[in-house]
Each structure stands twice: as structure tokens, then as C-alpha cells.
Length: 126
Image (cartoon, rainbow, N blue to C red; front, top):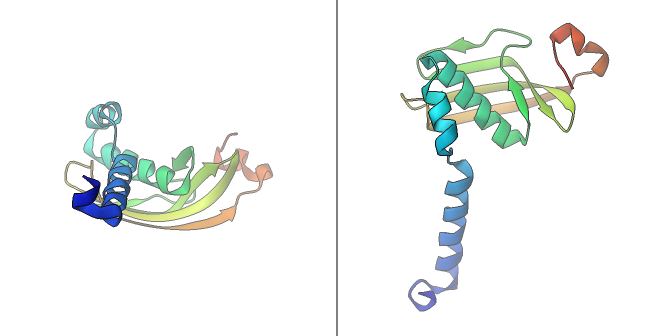
């Protein structure tokens, strides 16, 4: 196989395999998303994408302002995310497939750290 693809070809195949595995949802997550109402599916899928890209353990899309949505797109300029026990502001735009399982586009802007003294005011938690 190494002779057929060559070293560069094997590296490319390995990279593609790892990339597709990292971005794929597992069957359990898909099953949970499919149980939700469509608007909630959209929000959850986009929040999962944000968590993956930011290495965060929580994303909330509505902390500072309400997101705007269409059937398969959400703009969340007032979002937040938690990373390593700290909360940060976040703005993101996310478009999914009609079934809300595939991310078609995702852009984000990481914002400022939110002071711990302000967490209670915004219903944030450790």
C-alpha cells in the first residue's frame, strides 16, 4: 500500500481520516439531536460546533442578546462560552443542513473574559 500511495499519499489519507473522525457526530449525539424540535436541533448542533472549535465545555447562545434564526441558520452575537472554568463572550454565525446534522458554514469571534463578579448577573456558573 505504501508503494501505491507513496509517503505523501499515506499522510494525506491519515489526515483526512483523523479530520473526518474529529468533525463527525457520534450516534448517541445524533440520536439526542433528532429527539429535539427543529429550532432546538439547530441551536444544539451549532453550540456543539462552537464547543469543538473553541475547546469549550459549554456554550450559551442567548446570554447578552437573543439569537436570530431561520430554518437552518443562527446568528448569535450575544453568546458566551466556558473554557477552563472561565466564561468569555462569543459571537457566531452558523448554517446547517436541513436536518441540522451537518455544519455548512460556521464563523465566530471570541470575545473578552467575563469577570467572575458578573457571573450571577448573567446566570453563569462555575
